[in-house]
Length: 243
Image (cartoon, rainbow, N blue to C red; front, side, top):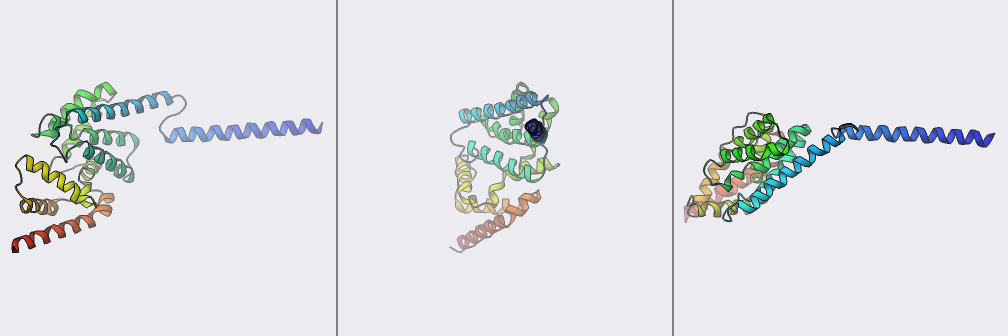
């Protein structure tokens, strides 16, 4: 009799533990945007997203000109990484974050067709690629607006556009500013936009004076270091002018 009671109590404990685990699983699934009925749909959407990202990266690696030392795949990956960081810090919901990252990976794809109006060409590429990966017309329109927001000078209108702009020029306030700046210098030399270091420093000074970060995340993390870079460049200009 006692053994029978113990068995019944053990079964009750096991059933309770199973319910707790089940409830925890549902909570995790809900936080990730799907339940047991919508899980396959969510995973399918996620796979389509990553397939689209891979498609664009493969296109960039195959078609970007080799002389693009700054606007290369490394830059695109950097913008993707920083867009994800800033987007999460600024509290974007999952769907908006997916659109932001798609725009980040596409924003310079127009360079595969030339340097003129490359943002518009990037939008054309987005329209040609994304429908096959389940993006709606509204999604693609928002992605196009984000891509166009990266045109210099930046004039973002919404939070998500501010995020991609800050991600695009995040390096201005980082320690690798000079290394990435040298890549851009060589790229512009190839295009006969700059002739020497002095003219390059003047361009950088003007650009840094006019540039601003838009999100609280970027302002807090990058503005101070960007100002230090500006001070250094202005000192180089002053010393060069005295020679």
